[in-house]
Length: 442
Image 1 (cartoon, rainbow, N blue to C red):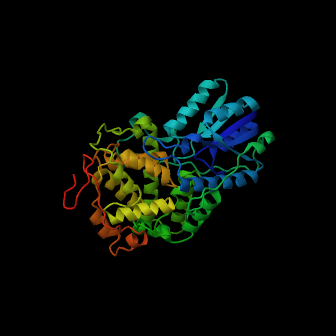
Image 2 (cartoon, helix red, strand yellow):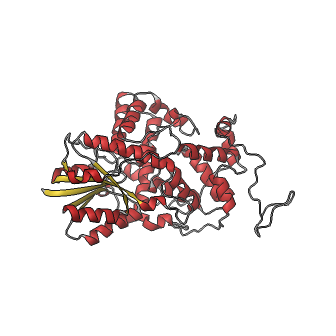
Image 3 (cartoon, rainbow, N blue to C red):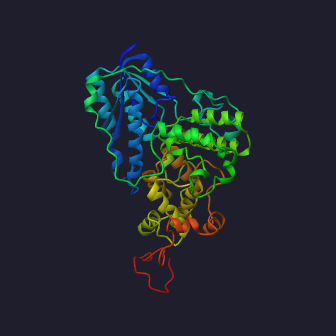
């Protein structure tokens, strides 16, 4: 039994089915529960966006407030600080003689560099990283990471019949907190972003889980899943899964219960099918490492593109010649959320119509989406851009066809104000000369 341990929360902001929290509590007499607001998240990157936008910040703070309440019910307290995580954790290790550091596995290159930095600085410390963000543990997969199938279809065929661990039972009482740290927590200041339809936190996640599977919506999921708007047209679990408010294994168990007690059909299978898509991207990200963020991706197929600042800004702010794209981007900017179909449409527009570097779109999504997940976001953008593992290469959505199919009456475009006055893609030509009336664009 260790005297003092520290659990570093990140994408696992919950108590239920949390292997790292359980392991830490079982093996440590005292436990520091830490969340660190990385100062890097608030600074613009080279891709013209901040890693953490205001709406994401609000959802994250709500998640932390709820996690704090859930831990308090079990005799623990959450310490929230801002700074550079390696420096913050190193200080806590030294001050409180921490003997073991725990976390949930993370596929992010940046997060894993921090973990490895700490391991190098504290070689005598015990480091424990456990799977909590995926359906499968690495040892359950029927292939090594280096042999990960190069297409989702091959991956699905090899894993969809595998047994999946049931959710863990968590103790009602956790190890005692380090009382001297309680006053150091910086609290949870809610940002001034507009209120979203989503509320962050484990309680909200479990409430949505129960509400969804207590209805008949799972039995009709596939029919409505491509709708651009409407709370009931998709499961809406993604923000809570991305932030770890909801365990994906808990979600799958509830789905299986519904299939056993109510009905198992093509729609309920499709929910599982899309969880497997999410799963695939988690393992792709783990395999690719830094290549997940490379312009040419794993395919080494760099797209021919330039950075047109005006086009990028018009895409971000819903001011392009494409009303459906504008409406979708307005929805994203106001709510922090967009349907899966909408994401594919606007991503295809940025890559194909606007001929911009896909990474700028991925970075903007990272800033704005409340359900941002490093693997799903960057993996899907690679998929659309044709630089990912998918052998077919790229997706080009016909915007007019998508508009006729998914917004035939123009209701979505009107609701989200997608029509703009005199839309024009470029106001200057390639040599920065003003484009005069009647002069064709480049």
